[in-house]
Each structure stands twice: as C-alpha cells, then as structure tokens.
Image (cartoon, rainbow, N blue to C red):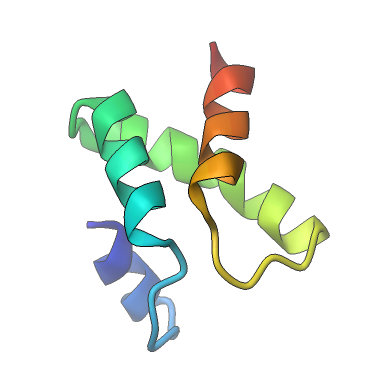
Length: 67
C-alpha cells in the first residue's frame, strides 16, 4: 500500500526501507487508517530533515510520538 501510493505520487524508488515498512505494518497491524496516520506524521519530519529514505529509527520516533 505504501509503495503503491509513493509510486502514484511520482517517485520511482521506494521512500521507505524494508525495515521501516515492517515496523509500520507491525505497529498498525496492517490497518490502512493507522498506516496512513503514521506516514502522514513521518513525511513532514522527513522533508524538514531532508531525509531521502525513511528508515526504522525515524518510524520508531514517530510511533513514540503517537503513543
């Protein structure tokens, strides 16, 4: 779901590492709404920090903020 949406947005390669995707899936239990909430919170941080590939530590940071 995430990679598809990234591709539709115009990016050819994945924006997330495999470990980041797994962490998002595990935390969200695969629920699309929760996946979107996590990703919507990750993107501004990634943009502000000029992150080209979102990794697991960044995902973990956002998850901790959401708790």
